[in-house]
Length: 181
Image (cartoon, rainbow, N blue to C red; front, side, top):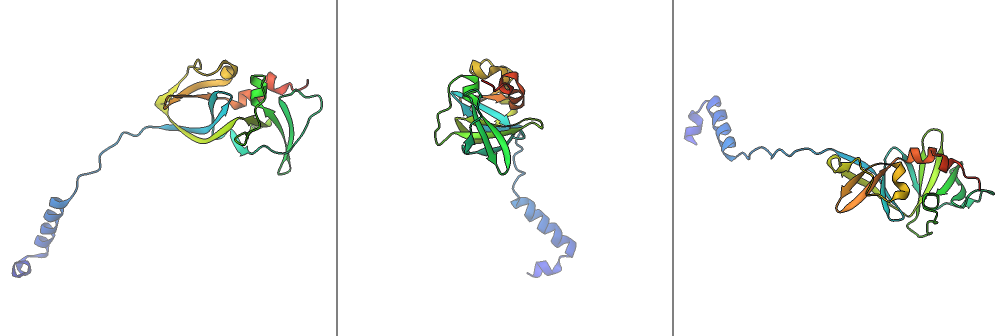
């Protein structure tokens, strides 16, 4: 103690600094930052697909529908969603010609591109999916042929192929717009 009383305040600060440096841990390891992309993952038949977050406005359980007379089979009907009329289309029925089984996992993706508002019935929704930018490929060869024309590319993640689908192009397509039987 007697030695501490003889030290100047500057000497005390220098001693504190020395002890701090001796006991200090190193800086945290610098980790390379990887950029990611996020979207809504869903399934149509055997195809795992992902759409950008801004495109899918809402995800609904199968709503009560009013059939549209004279419409193609894949046009399931019109739903009243909080006072707004929403046409609901069976995506598998439209693209494959087979109806989506009405299971508990089936959902309706609400898409609105500014001019067209539509509900797309899909087999299952996986929710928010994150992909590394480096896992993206422009190739669409790995996705089933029925959806290929609406695919911007694919993400490979854990042995799965996720088709990056352009839902705006799909709802603006002639095939989608012509619902009369």
